[in-house]
Length: 108
Image (tube, rainbow, N blue to C red):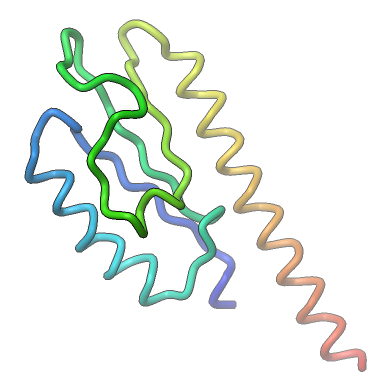
C-alpha cells in the first residue's frame, strides 16, 4: 500500500543549508511516494540558545503545508513528545483508512 507510511524530517533550523536540504528530502521521500501532508512531519530541533524563533522559518511554499513542530528537548520535551504522538496517530489512521478502502474494493 503506497499510502501506508510516513516520513519525519528532523533538521536544525540554525543551519541555513538544512532549510534547503529539506526540499531535496521532500522530493525524494514524500513527493515521489505520493504521501499526503498528514503523513509527513517536519521537526525543527532547537538547541539551547537557538537564534530561530518558533514559526519563523523561511521554508519553500510547498513545505509550509506540512505539519511542523519545534522541539527543544532540554526545555520542553513533553510538548515534542505529544506532537510526535499526534503525528503517529495520523499515520495509523491513514493506514487504517487505506486498508478499509482496499478491503472494500476486494468485496465489491
